[in-house]
Image (cartoon, rainbow, N blue to C red; front, side, top):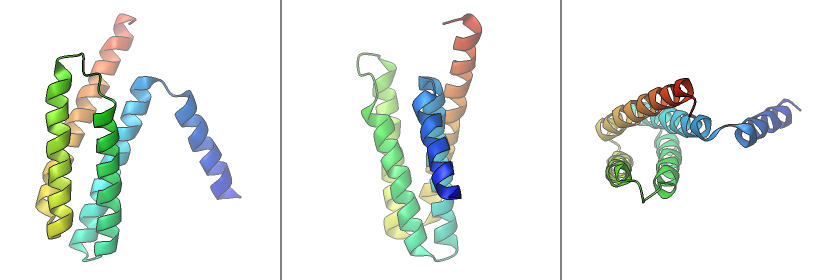
Amino acid sequence: MYTTAHNQYRNSAVQTASPSKLLMMLYDGAIRFVLAGIEGITSSDYQKANLNLGKAQSIVSELNSTLNRSIPVSANLEAIYEYVTHLLTQSNINKDEAPAKEALVYLQDLRATWEQASRLSAASGS
């Protein structure tokens, strides 16, 4: 019962969220999964590491696929997303937390940047 109610709430939150809120949700999910993947590596729970790093990669892939390629900054974001994917892959293959920690820093920085841009956009009435 609780799981069903929770899933309904989560689905409603996603369906009614603004584009900037959806972006924050994606970054939050990727960050959460990278942290869980790192935890899996450090505890030698490689199934957990593989599952969570794979979920983070899927989110980064989604972020990359939704870029508006007509905006010049998209090329830079695409390069960052591809590098983050590379880091997560290397971390997963080699069971080394260092690349995942580097990817985490990029994801956290990007999230903070988008959050600030969202606030500035809201403040200016855009």
